Length: 189
Image 1: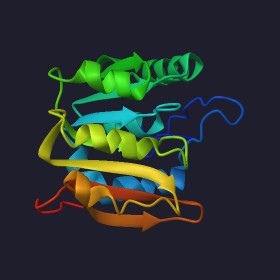
Image 2 (image 1 turned 45 degrees about the vertical axis):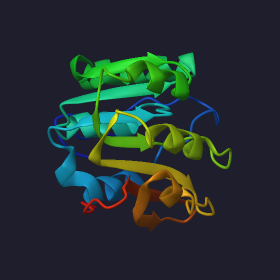
Image 3 (image 1 turned 135 degrees about the vertical axis):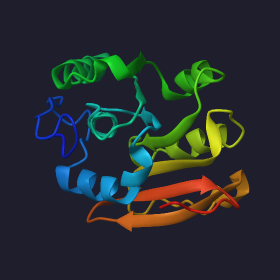
């Protein structure tokens, strides 16, 4: 896994051995950033279920002003910190080793995010839990874009009941990216 573009372009990132995390492939990461590219520069970026930190690091490399990484696994968080130091992006990053829901609660009142990316373990309903929280949270602006990496068959039909709209889906072989914004907001994706 490597950084695709920006200040840390072509640098290889560490990942955890085994199946504890599922790093987003370079090809899928490139597609994602081609979609959200113009929104990244100057943004405040939240990377939930961060794994090895590849998505948040890519955002920082492409000019995000700040990124917050939330990961529950201490070994994965050490990998993120090592990757941030290696890419020299650690000065623009905040790392939180915590359950995602606890971290969201702690971030309340401290940050508002332009872009939120989450890649929870598949098929456990964690994305719905996070979206339920965010629907009443001050962590999101009216035009915050929430991107969920999920299995292909994950259902998001409940999003409208939470005050969100699915504005775009990009499907890959085994998974998909779902782009979500508050309902009634012009989409930027």
